[in-house]
Image (tube, rainbow, N blue to C red):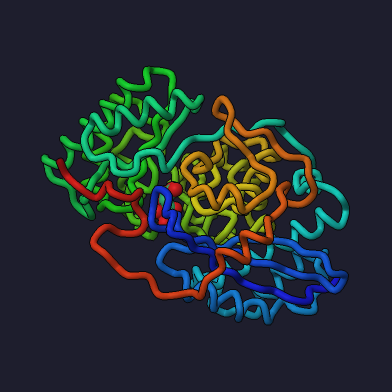
Amino acid sequence: MKIQEITPFVLSSKERGSATWASTMIVVKVTTSDGMIGYGEAVPTLRVKPVFSAIQQVSKGYLGKEVERVERNYHEWYKQDFYLSRSFESATATSAIDIALWDLVGKELGAPIHRLLGGKFRDHVPVYANGWYKDCVTPEDFAREAKNVVKRGYRAMKFDPFGPYYDWIDEHGLRQAEERVKAVREAVGEEVEILIEHHGRFNANSAIEIAKRLEKYRPLFAEEPVHHEDLEGYRKYKRHSNLRVAMGERLVSLKETLVYLREGLVDILQPDLTNIGGVTVARKVASLAEAFDVEVAFHNAFGSIQNAVSIQLASVIPNLLLLENFYDWFPQWKRDLVNNGTPVEMGRVKVPDRPGIGVEVNERILEELKTDPVALEVVEEPVWVVGGTWKNY
Ligand SMILES: O=C(O)C(=O)C[C@H](O)[C@H](O)CO
Ligand SMILES: [Mg+2]
């Protein structure tokens, strides 16, 4: 089969969900010479317009190629795009197309992606909740919502307790963060895992002070404690903190990942299929992590196509820790976009056995919600936090 058409869609709705980035989804539809259709997803955040146009550009490198040669097709784009290793837009565009190609190969063979990758290592993927703490500011807010998460059956949850602090945190911020974490620990009990998201905000000294204060609440990991590219910061943090470091959602290639693994800067790797290079690169990155005794917790914060394909890959790798999950905090339209739901039950998701990414896209919703890409307004609360949390109390 040949790749005949690649169409990007920006989907948007007034129903915003738990975060600014949750109100938008970028979907890629690939149509083949035989009339088959496959779907992929790209990263929105503040980059909706440039990503949309990157998909149009990257498509030029894929049109006319054989669908089934997914590895070769990725390599061809790697060869063409001199700046791929420096371009998030190119990386997410090629990732979305790659996911759609794997979806197509699966559909052609009547097999879910997990069968193409060696088969299920597990029938259910354990997940952790994110997006559950919209508008939470006080420790009481966090405790109340954390209890609701546990009531839904989750055994692990992630949150960012740092309010509006950036780069540097003072005693006031440390105390507020500690009170929020303490409240969640007390609300969920000793056996539910709590995961601390830093969103790559801090310099190393501040992150180390935070770790000292939060250690006693036994978080499973500290995510992106320092800025993504701050290798010196990661080194210093690893030397002076006792917490396990999770990172990886901004990695855009196999070789960039190696930098963090080789130096032992990461304990739990969080590659994102929608910007690391699709299924093609994500599976290699997972194997690379396995060789370093590093567990994987795929980053999975955007939409239902990313969620579906992440479940497929999470089901096959031996070194899976947990898969991130926003499912219960998606706006309803994201759940409706796929015909076959992947609900979370008792903190895990049953791996679908339908072909390709394991879910079918509802074309009616795609048509209804498609919109022109527009530049997002920039407001004080950054898009990368869960909405309504950029506050002190
Ligand atoms: O889910 C996570 O780990 C995040 O960091 C959330 C978003 O992906 C990130 O803010 C990018 O918008
Ligand atoms: Mg994160």
